[in-house]
Image (cartoon, rainbow, N blue to C red; front, side, top):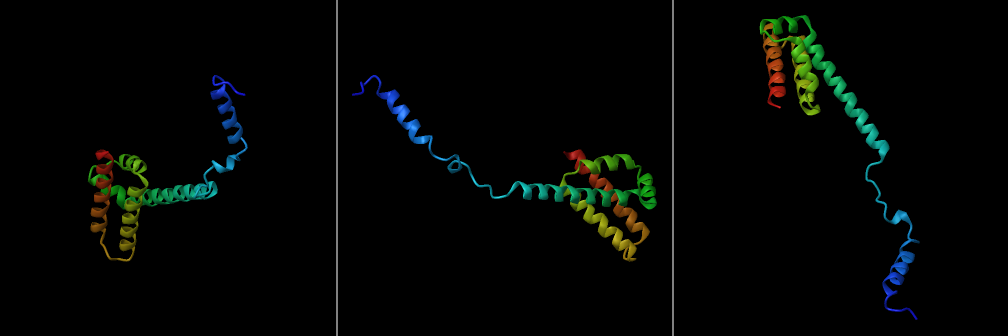
Length: 133
């Protein structure tokens, strides 16, 4: 017979013996997204960001853009540095706007003057977004 003093330790041992045979898989959670899918999504996001950065930098590096920035007394280096600090969502929006402006200009829908105004406005918007943070 077990004495009452030893009862808590005997009970503890009995509980441990009952719990130990349970497979560890019971406690593991199934992940909804596999690590491979997470890696693919991260790579796609990184690639999209690089493409958006290239679009915006290409827009500001043209001769017309350089002239417009100089006339507005905005430093290209300052704009370029600010572009790299934008988050993915902001960068995607700016890239879409610059892409549209370039396509409209190429199609003849906007004039040189309009493109320069858009360019300066986008540069100012980028600098404001970065300054507000």
